[in-house]
Image: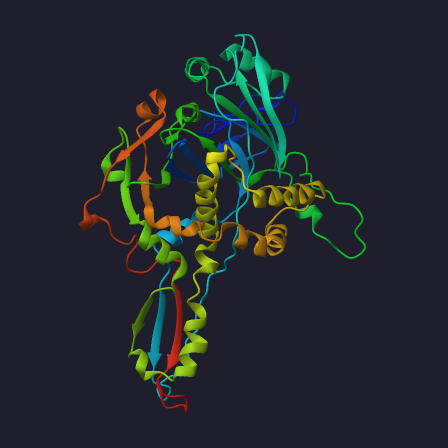
Length: 457
């Protein structure tokens, strides 16, 4: 899907995952993809319009580069936005919410138990593009449909008349076009797909943390330093009749690692020509909505709720059951995509609130302010407007299904075709909570048995 490509000068990158590290001048950058490849897909059929899809990903790599790039094919020009860093962890929490383990103890036997509570935060963001079939293009031509900045990324949406034209454009604009990609790129060109070319600076926010008297920020990384981690996640929203994940370029990265794909669609699905055993979880929309808005589920030991004073229970237990810190990002992501699907009849793919968020993001990036603190500041500024913008759209989840696919996809399938989907319901006996006993994200607390003078139930 993503091609992280070596960029000329100080930049590195590759296609649809990551091609082998490419020489840059006299330097050979050591650039490797790390971690599982996680992808979020939302697809909805809209009467009179066709299909609207969102695809989101957050690549991870380790390497000695200060910049890298990506090349991603799309059937139609996408709207582009940033996604939150913990998007995929929060989608997991939406699939199977963390459980709150409550131990009721006798205060005469022991004093207390420590409890752990995970950190969390919420909100997403996006943009739009011209839609529909593009005009005639010469085989030696590349047409740049749109250029923009999205946080740490410089983005160009383009159509190429041939693989050679794309290779020349990439060379002229600081990318290295990997050997052997012509046939696959040619298939996308013949199908009139467009490409999104992305450059990213991975210079950290370490030198931009505000301090008293600070006047300038240094966001560069020392020469020869190594980047190890995930870069800013990206979301792409586009028109397509059928859901699709374009991963064919990923074969240029060598053996593909584990893929985890979350598909929010009108029906439960499987991936065509991929073993059904990779479908590991399916959640109907009504249950998914409940997971997002209802209090976290309880696992009680050592007694029953009636054994605890009402005030103690409410102040200790109920205060911890808000799902927002754990799945609020996923909730807002789903709501924004469903709202965008509603308004797709107008031909617009982006939401006004997403444009406002992108403006704030680019202002922060211009000052070298990147990271959790900047993201939280944007969230605080936009919280009320976002809530108003997506109000009511979340109810559309009742008509949707979320499928989780997890495993190593066959390389021959990835090489010859984009990932397509068909309706499939996994066996009920296998469709159970993942890591059912205890999840790392579960929460713990303890409360004393009644007898401390609290109010009766």
